[in-house]
Image 1 (cartoon, rainbow, N blue to C red):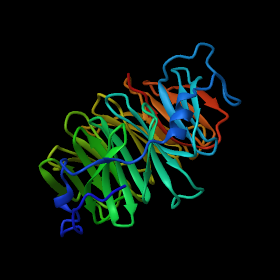
Image 2: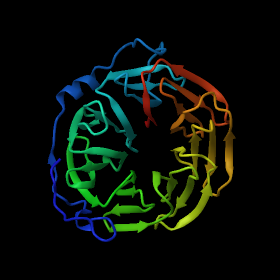
Image 3: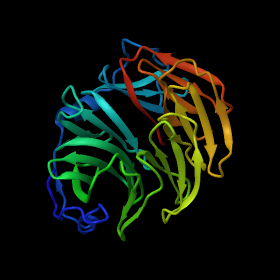
Length: 335
């Protein structure tokens, strides 16, 4: 990626001078190999159960060790599959564009690329990606690179610009032209065309996500993880003690609620913005499960290294699918 200007991060931790949507951009790469791989959808695979009538995927999952991007239908049958170089993170925008972070080496500090699946364009990344989100027709990447931690915006055909340089970061989320960055000091910074807003809702931030309307969800890390619901101006609406150790999070689309999955405790909770538990599941079938994606009806896709499980909106175990190498992420496909 090319540097589009801006100095070091200021006292607030964000270089506001580079937080501009008008920064210069250029085409970075046209990954012809990646484009060919994505275009070649396989008719069958050697693992899992293949749909007898492949249709539009309902979920996408990243099989890092199996080196596949996999589309699953509503019954979790494999409906699409493409061979990729170690997919490690997924994001899908409101427009349906699917983005995939690819590891080109064997470890987290090796080379990475960002692939827009719809166009087949892959952008090489200079540094270690810390987070990925998609919104407003672009992908947002939090990148720990040679110039420090930066937020980049990438268009489907590879045009990119640096939105901001931040002091540090652990995760990010996006809504329209806004990007929310969380860090290890418990601070969140909201970047947009107006500049930067910041707040400190808790301890180290484990995950952030866009909620319903203009709200945001923040999940803190550690044995006493807390779920924080923020308003558009980053003021705190509600703080909830989860009772879970380092849970994972999946926001229910078009609803003001969120799933939390405590893999160690084998528990899952669906919590509304007003704080009440809509669902509380205990004794999940295996330890180590993480939240993949929430469905619009309030269900949940759970990920294990070698399998996916689906919980319906009533909290019942609906179906499963196995035979994967090592699943690391899952998202809900959009029409």
